[in-house]
Image (cartoon, rainbow, N blue to C red):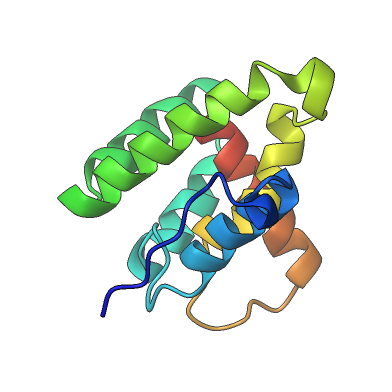
Length: 129
């Protein structure tokens, strides 16, 4: 039997629960939304000059599998709506990058420097936004 729930239930009224569930969903995917083979190209794109960053990331986004592309597009549109309320929720582009970077872009194997990797992951999400 299919389990049903309602977002009107009290346990879903805390936005942190909903956000945590969303992040957990993406983190538990067998492969991240940005596939493993595109992790290094995305990270490399962040290291380029600003105009080249935008062009390269746009190319990479276009190369995503259709389902990943559609899901990423929908998620980014939602996150942009979240950013519109940053005066209330403090979710700036930078903060969203920090929160969602490691969830949406993961290396298949742990990189040597976790701090540097996380910074680049968050920068990639900021660029996407």
